[in-house]
Length: 212
Image (cartoon, rainbow, N blue to C red; front, side, top):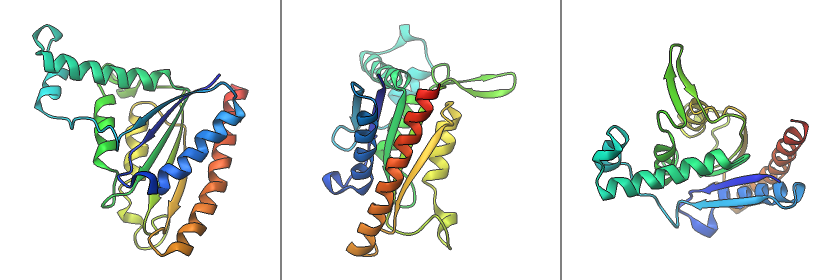
């Protein structure tokens, strides 16, 4: 049985290209491993409170000194961290908003990137503690960023690869959907190509898990 954590974040809801393709990924993973369990985190419908003084203060203080609000926020963070550790495969759908990720997804990352929980600093520097996970990252972009003059302005994929790797999640397959702002025909062409890549990514992850 495979445990899948499915995280979506697009503010476009049902019209989201990233969520649409990511749903296909999850369906293929479930078909390949019947009985798989899926935990869904829709950060658009149920956004997390943005990181602020209350939670940040709790992260760097003794639990004995926490207020009730701090205890509740830390408990929420603990739950999100537990979901990550419980997952065998993590599927993340991310739309590009102003050249980077949605603030809802950034907040989720703020809740799970915790010293002593998902990473720590040792003699050789930082070490990620979330190991052995397969991540499938579905990215949607209105323009073309895989090549050409806008490639250097893609602050979405480099950041996600870095922060996931910082926590130990270095096995990342990327499914890209780009150029969707260039009209319906271009969007459908991109979605068709992404659908093929989604199938490939799901197959590769299933085969890797089966061989492990």
